[in-house]
Image 1 (cartoon, helix red, strand yellow):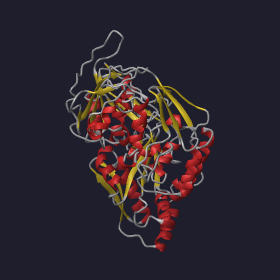
Image 2 (image 1 turned 90 degrees about the vertical axis):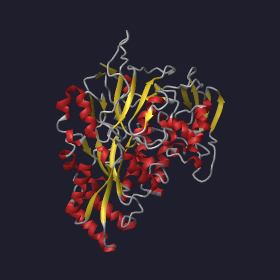
Image 3 (image 1 turned 180 degrees about the vertical axis):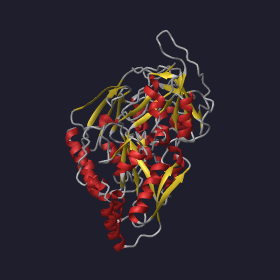
Image 4 (image 1 turned 135 degrees about the horizontal axis):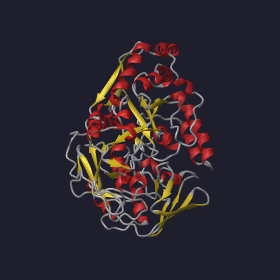
Length: 537
């Protein structure tokens, strides 16, 4: 999140303990004759919310680790291009029935072969209602999926060990593009004996594997070593990766400056004005597929029906996005003009209704007064956020603006960690608005809309429901071309700008950097560094 995943689902955050914890690996690099470093690369991360089961991981802490230890049918290159990996081919004549042929020779790191059943069984597990997987909605297009009863995906058929077919309920032209996301990863047979235990020590088929028992030290780090059984075309240019979990971004950044952390993919707001000069050509500030917002639950008092629409619009109009992004983020954020991302094909900065994102305090006051005429507002408007992710400054700025413009009580609601925030959001026990957002799972507009605003979707944390949005999402998914689909997804956003289930804030650049201890650091289209390419100096 994965924005991939929650960046509130997706949410970019950090959790855990000591800023200078022992990585368990050598800080010195050895280099082979081919130039590949054998040194251990340390990277910033966050404690996963759940055990590392691909279909139950929809946030970036777990997603970063899963993407290192699993390989899917396709993978995404740095520019977002989908390239076949385990798949030899993905063929269709009607965009509804797909024949998927696997490359031979793939195994999991425990020696089990990767077969058609590895995918079919994993997808059935992820889709089954009783398994309550957070990413189950990714399988909704496949025949047999049900939100009401336990059901196998009847649209999945194993032909032989290297061939299976997928039949969707309707044509969906971008279905192959989705298949690099972690929900579609394969699982070994051994996983199904005890899925919870598997999630604590997962066995994958990717570039890396966990470094033995206890490799995932909760709230401290996860230690990965190259997987000698990896059968794909990508390469590993180091001796392993240790993903370190931090209490604060400032602690991580200080470690980066001191050479105690090699790669950091989020800069604390305290360093926005200095990190590019401090890191020089090792600093990263580039567009990424990350959208940030805060969500107002549909059940929140005063925020449903006509009153709720007026209040949501008033709040949006009361936010000076340009001022916040300049004063706090200093060029590392861009005010949002839609619900997706400028780096995604089909993005538009002129969606009808987007004027609600403009700063207009007088109109905001007027709409708030109209809502008060329906039912007077009382209490305090709060925005929940995690203190380990660098969010306090903007939450303080936004709530201060709401107090000054609307004349209401408004304040931040801090949680000590992203995991703590997500736990209350997932359980629907949070009592106010909360920071949210999305880091794309795959490079398509639908991915920013369906998972977040479709009725019952797994990342629809505000419980928004619109029959019009659902219809447009389905029509877009069934379109004969990406261009036709994107036109429908723009229409979806026109409805969202009326209803405002979430308040768009800004697009986040990929901001980060590396220490002088490493080389070959590249950040991908989704703001995640390609850690397998990093070499230790």
